[in-house]
Image 1 (tube, rainbow, N blue to C red):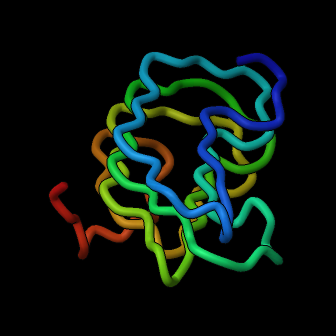
Image 2 (cartoon, rainbow, N blue to C red; image 1 turned 90 degrees about the vertical axis):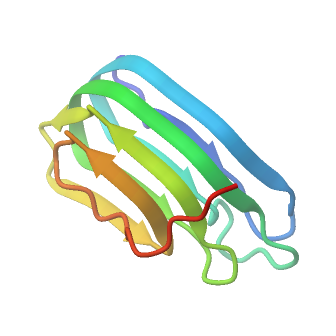
Length: 124
């Protein structure tokens, strides 16, 4: 990925409902990307209705440089994102690290330090 707005991305919004699960991003390199990782249930922040469900998202061996934010995990209070896994990811050049809202999971060997909440890992 070269000079794109976002690296690996999963997006939805209230009103779309449904399950987004078992997504894997592996062995991706980035150069000059604005936001490294974008997981968002707020695609249209003014939307109403049934919330989507995000779970079991794996990002492994993502490397490279960003120009703004390492990543965002923006999930809804009524539908938190569960089981996000970062493993062996190395993002450089960021002005802002990771941003998390209602996002649960684990990170291993990942830079910058993850903001994922590790207190609610759910097995599905």
